[in-house]
Every structure is written in structure tokens, then in C-alpha cells.
Length: 329
Image (cartoon, rainbow, N blue to C red):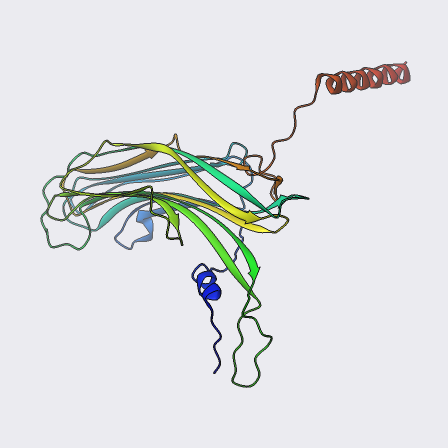
């Protein structure tokens, strides 16, 4: 078996991921996990292209206590916004998890049209704003449990991918020989993660990450706090810039998720309110960004007509109205 590798191929192969496009998805789920279908509600919207909201909720009595959970997710492809909400509450110590999760996935094909520049810098600006419930938990009867007693998690992922010629491609392999692929997929990504949870012994853990993936660039934020919690307000702006080839198909994806759950603890409430998040905007240093789906926040915003253009349009409408009146007469 023949394997041909080089420094360039290794650098590219480390970023190889499959290209995939699918219809946009909006999902909300609320459940009490005792593996009974009546205690689990999930709502999904597929192939979303217009502003869409889905919601799910449960309110049940089980194992000596009340289990409530609700989730809501909204995608607005006109404004480039995602809204997420998840809340879980339990008043009984026994039983399994009560949880809620909301998520949105958006996919699109982009192309930077340019007649001069071979590359362009794409800048993805993401504004996020979420409030967390940092209240403590009640008694934990089984501190040896593997799951945290309470957990809130928020995340977002931006990715852009394109194909490049493999410099090690030598043609199809013969017999037992294997050749390198003709093309490699380069993927650049930016991710944000926030975990806040109460361990089985009641102590808190906090993890926050914000940075590029698949590169050696140091993260903007990489913080872990044990036994304490920062402000309940998780907000800010993230800027992800990537140099891409022009006049080339670019696969783009944007995923967000909110998750909250309570596990075998008294007086637990977990909530992540991201109904003010997230807003995404894209600009390019060179050329014109074209969105296959026609999203203005990912491509070029339709131009506003000049005053002279408006005058011509109004004159045309007036002439049409005059002709219509004469025909009716």
C-alpha cells in the first residue's frame, strides 16, 4: 500500500471535513426522561426560509414531585437572528432528568464574486445576549451520580468550507495501491461555549470558551472557574475573519443550542434565556458576497432606489393608472 504525504497535505488534511448541505432546522424539546413517550415533547420545523418559531413544554407530576420544562427556538432568516430559551424545574429528588433544549441549524452556499482579487476576507460578526439562572439547588440524595445536579449550556458554531486541489494527487491507484484524493476540503470555524453546572456534591463549575477551531490561533476566551460563578449575563460580540478564495463555492453553516436540565435534586430550576440572541452579519473585503438562499445578512443587501429612480417608478404607476381609467371609460 502506498501512502504519499507531505507537509502541505498534512496541514490541509488536519482541516478536512465532509461538505454537507441540508434544509434549515428549528428544534425545541421538553422532557422528563423516564423513557415514556407521554413525558417527552419535541417540535421541529424543517427547510425553514421564513421567520419561524417552535415551542415545546411539559408539566407533569411524577416520582413524588412536579416536573416542568419548556423550550422555544426562533430563526429569522430575514434579520439574521436566532432566539433560544430553555427551562427545566423539578421539586422531587427521585427519578431521572427533567430537561429542555432548543436549537437552530442554518446552512447556505456562498460565493464571493470578484473579477480582480483572488481572495477575500470574510468577516462574520455575531452578537449574543443571554441571561442564566444561577440559583442553587436543594438537597442531593445521591452525590455519587454521574450527572450534574443542575446544568445550563449555550453554544454557537460558525463554519465555512471549500475544496482545494490536493498537491499529492497522482491519479487513481492500481491494484492494492491507494492514491490521495483529488480534492481536499478546508474548513475554518469559530465556536463559543458556556457551561454552568452544579456537581453532584453541590459545588459549581463554570467553563467559557470563545475562539477559532482547527487552527493554532489562541482562543479569545478560555476560562474555568470551580466553586464560584461570574455574572449571570453572557453577552458580547464575536468577530470571525477568514480568508477565502473568490469565485468559488463556499459551504456555510451556523448552529446554536441552549440546554437546561435538573437531575435528582430537590428545588432545582435551570434556565437559559437567550430571547435577545443571536444576531449575525457578514461582510467581505473584496468582491460581492452572493447567498444561494438569498439571505441579505449573508450577502448583499438589495440597494435602495435613488430619488430619480423613485420618480420614474411613480411616473410609470401614474401612467398605468391613467390608461386603466380610460379603458374602463
